Image (cartoon, one colour):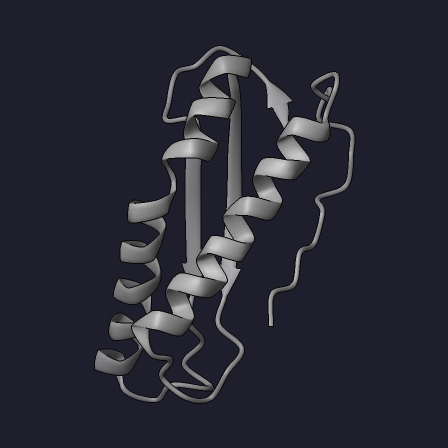
Length: 109
């Protein structure tokens, strides 16, 4: 969901959720979150530029549903897929919505 508003904050924000139900140890949950944050940090520039050009803010969530700690390569590839798809969605939006739309769910396997 994209909403047009003055750029008070960063144009791109991410929420990372790693459930305790799947990863019992905090160190495992933190490791997964670090992997996701780092892969996001390295690949966010093109999407951020598109959002800044449109004066749009985008917030999205990444939910970990696997029971195993992923490798960095698999997290990087999944994040690349997510960000490219979000770029396409942003480019496809001719007019920025008024915020009345339902959030779009994207799944990357």
